[in-house]
Length: 190
Image (tube, rainbow, N blue to C red; front, side, top):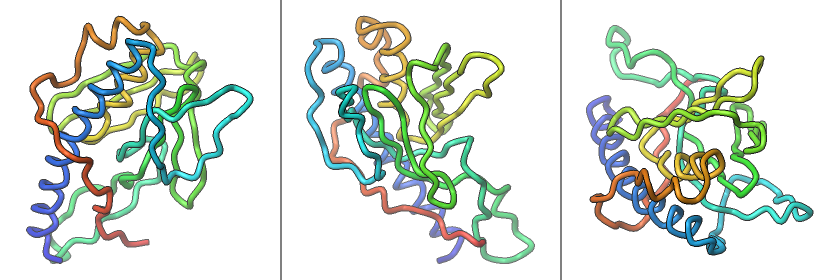
């Protein structure tokens, strides 16, 4: 696939994911604010829920994680740069106790909400990110991409309570669409 086609496909996927994420974030915010149990949806991350803690799935989203190993994206002509290597777009599971996903080499990684002491969120298009801050001397972890709105809602809920998720809605005018396929993954070289 040419670089131009890859960029067009990525742009289409990002637009669909951004619309889906705004709708999913809105649903999650309302459910959490009202104290409703979030409907269980199938997920593919491969995490066993903690039954003893009554862990509930809140959603799954596609994002890049700063703790993942960057991989080079295969480009067209060798003189044209495809940019610096970036972490892969992978699925992340948001639950009532943690965010979990598969890092490079299929290693399961997770961060528990009880260890988060701060959050930074930016949901501006083409620059969306959520940064979770652990207590010092821990290193902040950042998820970024058009699908991070549900993660932002979960982080704000855990740090600031249920009222905060309605005080700062993600994107109130985004249209409702069906979830996009998470099948877009750039070709990588190893």
